[in-house]
View 1 (cartoon, rainbow, N blue to C red):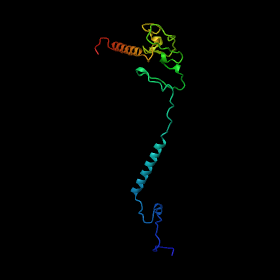
View 2 (tube, one colour):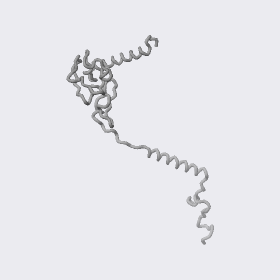
View 3 (spheres, helix red, strand yellow):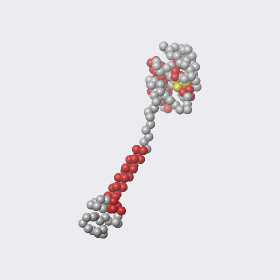
View 4 (cartoon, one colour):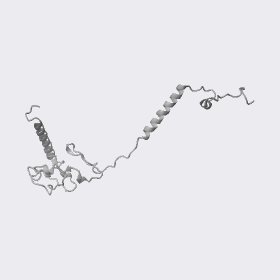
Length: 179
């Protein structure tokens, strides 16, 4: 009874541990089957690693500056900064965090209610240059210290100044106009 190939039991080959794990009627795996299993395992591991590499982050908080309307002329507005205060970054005079700005109803030749005050990082809206470089800051027709992006008049002045700078740059590169 316990020894051999009787009719009631199946004989498992003892030479292969893999064959011992397979059902009695299954064929022994060929070398090709082993390769397929290994490739499938590698692909599964790669997919698991790529999913682990993705880090979900919370959406940025909505700040009051981000909710503000966009600036005219395609200017960039910085809504948040780490380690810097707004007065340390270049900005239009009308947006200066240190000096209040008072918009005039219409362009005037003299500064309006202290608009001529400026910090070292203030830019002239009309000239698109630092306040120190603006020739019409305190006076002119009109005074550039009163310029702001909410006025169609000042936006047009800014466009005209940019065109003039572009023409001057081209003329400097090609003084004879041959290009």
